[in-house]
Image (cartoon, rainbow, N blue to C red):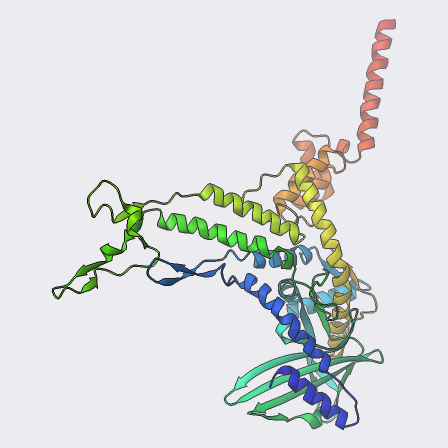
Length: 503
């Protein structure tokens, strides 16, 4: 019995209790799983025929295991880093409420979890952040005395849309499946949005053989109700080429599978050549055997995998002795230059296809300043597309966390929420400094602003430093001030010269 069967059995039980329910559409997910499994194999570096293969040495087959550079994982992590840097900020209606939420952020490890969720969401197509709370109540009065807000990262395998269309999810199940001795335990949390409220059913189903028991069915009649949705779906804002019905995204590197594989194959080529550069022996089959005292053929030594390769006798014939005609020693050429070029080209191909921009994962960056700016502009456009979707989901999540925090006795006003994204996708400090220097030369950034941003100085301290090293700080505040100052000096000099000539 699968999770789909358990969900449908629960729907039948609800229908029997007067609540007509149909969760059969959840089965559409099964058709999508095959694509996610492929993406996961690239992410984990265990793709058949790329990271694992079979060789043949002329006598027997042997397994070949190639290590992976896990380019798919690097791409997913880079996207998470670009989106959720330290400069990504959440602000509420005023500083007081913002500070309250920042304290909550630290308590639930919000930053680390949203990054983790983005990595999984961008590698598998979809992940979720699920908010909940343990609320402490007085035994007699039922009043709230405190509690703890929690935030969990939910991966694709545990997410089951139940009622949905392309634009919205009306009902969704988060499922944890465990095996305890001879019993399979399904812990299910169903979130349904109805009448502008979230209704949550927490269910435990136990499966022994073919017997399914909803052991807490009577307790589920007391449902939890919240004003906000208690989860956020984290996924790339990219077209889903595999289904027109499911509310899942596509892996951010789903279009970059070919270059991901090429990188691993080229890296394996370097390792193979370096490992085998001492010698490979191509050996005639007759040298593997000799006659024993009874005249039977027996093997002299084992034909070791990937060290000795059999050849037909005729290929080794020359004018030497019979033994010289039976084997040959070969030292493979180390082709590291060619392989490194394949890796570099494949990295660029993969990052362009995944929206990161050419050169984002280049091992040996040799980009000009102009090229760097162009690449950053490409990334900015791609990043903006993802921000548009993610902003709405994060706002929902913040509202949920604030509602839960209020329930535990720490009131946070979430009537006004703003998401502030980083205004540039450049996260490497050295790259950002180089771009800033270009902007200074172009007259769009002042030296004072440069020192304030990268050296942590106040504008006054920056002014003093610039003066101390021989630069006129005032000339770099605004371009027109420099022009006016220089114009005044030139006019004064010209006037002085005229007066001298007249005298």
